[in-house]
Length: 55
Image (cartoon, rainbow, N blue to C red; front, side):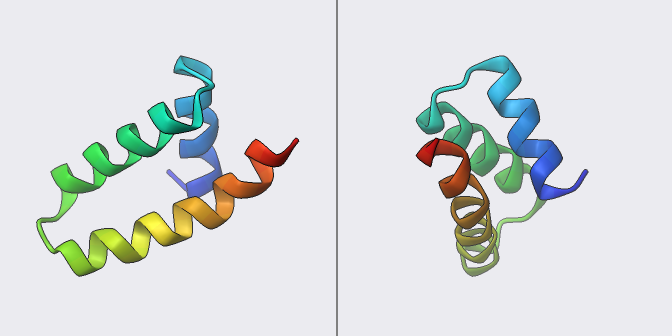
């Protein structure tokens, strides 16, 4: 599932950006325990989420 699809999925469950961030982080933690990798993916997620929350 690509990044935009995950954002849409989280927003369909709860549009609150904080929920989306927590859900994405939890999903990443299930995939990998490497904090550096998770931080990098969360930066990507934040960049993709920012335009969504600006509107």
